[in-house]
Image 1 (tube, rainbow, N blue to C red):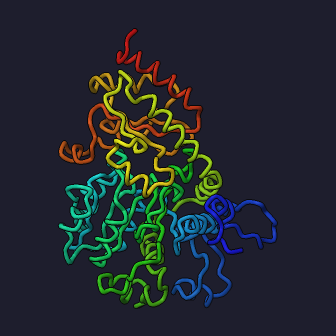
Image 2 (cartoon, rainbow, N blue to C red; image 1 turned 30 degrees about the vertical axis):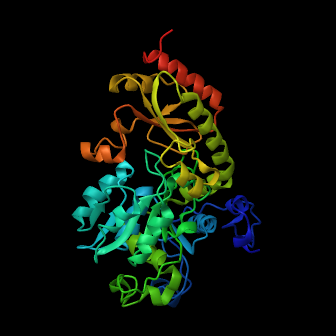
Image 3 (tube, helix red, strand yellow; image 1 turned 90 degrees about the horizontal axis):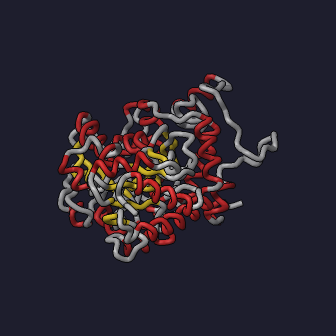
Length: 432
């Protein structure tokens, strides 16, 4: 059976299954092991020198996790995937596999707050400069690229503004400069709503904690390699050059299109250790089986809630890409399946205090820093995900004191509307 010829909904169930196992098990087993027996000393040597594939230590790979990685790679159509312990570790390992001290990456200004902090502080301490573009126009990225730039980074849909990146045009800027485009596709729901590889991206990172898991039960991140970038263009000696950690092995010569994802595993994961547990990988596999079903319901619920909030007397503004007046509506129609998303933003009337009262009055919708869960989540970015940002960075990211991010779950949207109504009343935003 050729998995590549199957449709998304079928791949999300069948990819990664080993139907030749002697057990005849319908599902993937959980392998709660830290290490693996070697057949001989020569077998062990071949594994460690990367001339033979196999399991060495669960920090590098695990049979349950391998099945999960194969399923994700199949959904995206990539040459390989690497499972990590969180979305932030996926970003860190992807970037540090490309850029070193004295080099830089160019990034979109519309970023998740945690990504901002990693870029502004942690990477800077490692000697990697992150240059934030002044806007989302592809020309804004192009003007700050120089000979030391090693990647462009953007989110397929900005968090929390829901602004959609012009992936095809940004990818053209990356290609013309001989660097890969990395896309955080968390809002693309595991490739179901948006697949950046279709538009020229070379690397996808994803917070698997969100739609991939879908039930708020496990943390995880993923890196997917599109296998479409020329790592032998002279800019990436750590990939196309002698590896200090493997006795001069050249990853590009040895692994070809898969060189980047192999490096992320055998250098990044080996040295930084951000591996998922086998149980978490199992939970991701379970979540993936219903991904498309969940997302379709959430997208429709988001539309219903957006229509309810539109013109509501307690609401100043609704930002929903499904509305024609949204600045990213045209791009959402191009890049996102269904032309919409499962997240919207709403700015309330009133001030910070009334917004806090509204959030704390919610009874059904959860107040958490989460998206893509089976329960509806309301997040107040100014108090949570973007709390550490400066005033200028908050402005660039589109975060205001009364902005709320709403991620619809699997409930009946009419019950969520009723919950919003009672919270508006308790917050004093509506009166009889």
